[in-house]
Length: 460
Image (tube, rainbow, N blue to C red):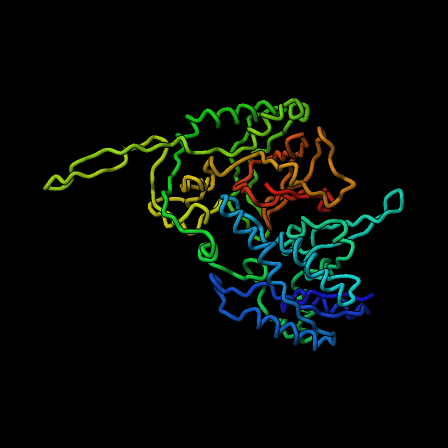
């Protein structure tokens, strides 16, 4: 069997190539260049050239043929243009997920097949298994990687059965320290190379600078939302009352106890909401959609007043105090920020960290809240549009009206969260047992079975 290894110059793909060669496969390496423009990148102008040089040395060391392909046009059209479009709408895309679906297991796969490959291998930390259904048809299953600190299954959440049928993940069942050890033992040139960071094939970037290639900077206000807003908000009261009515018993928990993610661990999960499935089923489609819609803070309006200042009583204008919030700063464009973001706001004078809780791109306003337990950071329900639902296991696709229990993550490296999934005519709804911090439109929600198999995904 002829296998093409996507050799990036990193240690993971290098060891994957080494293991394939040792296993007796007919292996060749293919390095792909996907990006030329260095605008906004933080690691210099020729990073990809260094990666190619290292990858070629690795191939020579292992003793496998080395090829090069430039897929930058495809990458720009199918990944980067999508990124710009999503950010312009105030959504936060995940380019790494798109890169795997559109490039590595599509454009790259087609190139590998032209070179004679039967299978394509990558250095992802995930596992694959094959089973057969009652008719003898092969079904491909994908699982979390054995290393909980490096599991990368999330990035493969949009792959199809056809793509999985030709995919190989040689290091999915070993841990990162063992990968490093194998690389050193084999004296591979990439053994000490640091892991790549940032956007897939672009690298670590200053995101606003990168996005400014197509999105304009426009100064706008940063509005801090006070706790008093939620006490007065009819929408928040409705959501709380509705969620309360969906419980079997007890008091509904509206705010996550989440503090931080550290090596895959989460602090005290807080009060767990015990949802009654019969009550979930009785809720209307309209109420489900309303529950999944995040609060909008456009009803916080500021009025100005004039006053006299200084010895000369110079006439000035200021905003009147508002019980629900305050303008606390300015930003360069709401489209450059994302829900849950803490860094880059440059707002001082607070005891706790400040987080973005809404980005209003049409009005160019960012709304923020103080502290991890700010009410605006937490939500319990999200919706996936019917057109965005993707089943890796097509044979396990839910039917309209069906309710299932899965474990879900809404971002890479987030520990899996217990949740109930309910498929309605107007979308797939995910209601979490504990409120989630920073549910972000444009990101992917991914659901797993109890045995760590990834079942499906969808765009929030």
